Amino acid sequence: MASLDHLGLPVSDLERAKSFYTKVLAPLGITLLRTVPASVTGNFDVHGFGKDQKPDFWLSQKSTVTPPLHIAFAAGSRAEVDAFYAAATAAGAKDNGPPGPRPQYHRGYYGAFVLDPDGHNIEAVCHKP
Image (tube, rainbow, N blue to C red; front, side, top):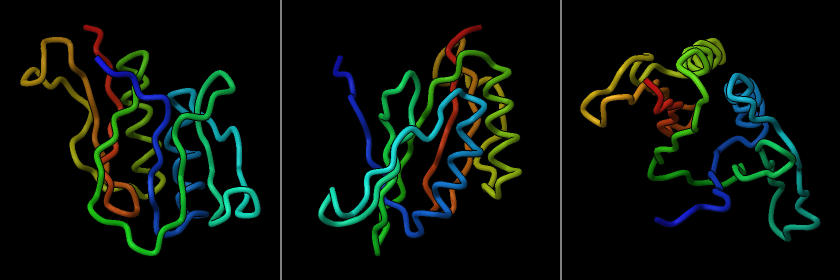
């Protein structure tokens, strides 16, 4: 199985997305760790979120954001999934599946789904019973 090192998500409004993801990812222990300015990237500012001082989820400004992506963040507990969902909906995310078991995926799957401001399907999932 392949492991991802990092992922970039194109967004239509970088500052709105930074504010949204700062709130939404906090219950999962994921924080904004780094901003790299356009003067370094050569194109645009990017914001990196992660844990343990390793940014692995990057936001970048794009004029066109299509198609929407699905990104699932690992949660350490079902309570973290619930907190993610509460934070996301409070931050303006649209419900795309409230917290709960998803036995169609596997027996211990517990997830919540929201749509971010660009329509990306963002999930928090716990694989523990």
